[in-house]
Image 1: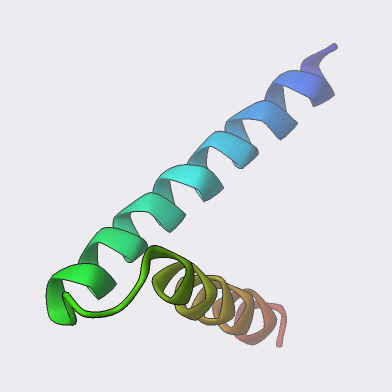
Image 2 (image 1 turned 90 degrees about the vertical axis):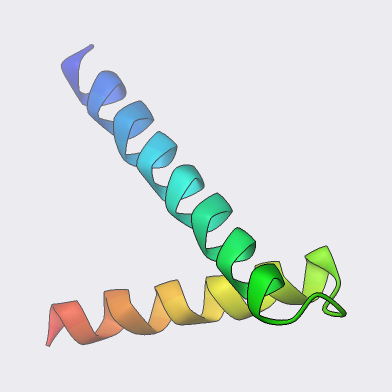
Amino acid sequence: MDADKGDATTRAKHEQMLKDCVAKERAKNSTQSMEQAKKTCEGQMKARATDAKK
């Protein structure tokens, strides 16, 4: 049961980081669509996760 709670917390943090990133991307470039900003942020987050594993 505790593992599920940990997974939910991690997912919630990920979602919040994604929302924050999208907001920043859209603030920098208001012509960027929500989908474009989300893809950019997902790529950035994936790159950071890969770098953290090294």
